[in-house]
Length: 94
Image (cartoon, rainbow, N blue to C red; front, side):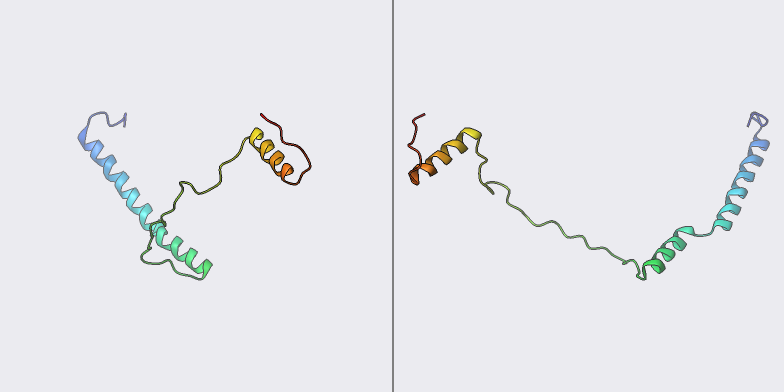
């Protein structure tokens, strides 16, 4: 581009040369996107669907869906109360 400076004839010549090279490369390359798709379809022995249907997810309820996680002190109290039912230990007052 430095050689052309601001000469419109030279810049037009460069532009035409670049577009010719681009056109030649596209002709040599061909349509690679189709060949890649066809190659993949032949590899998996199946064709890609024309239209993909995506369904919305099912509604889920997340509130109140489980048991509350107890703390360590609450677990000890519950174990002591269960052991009291079996008569192994007397209950303690907290």
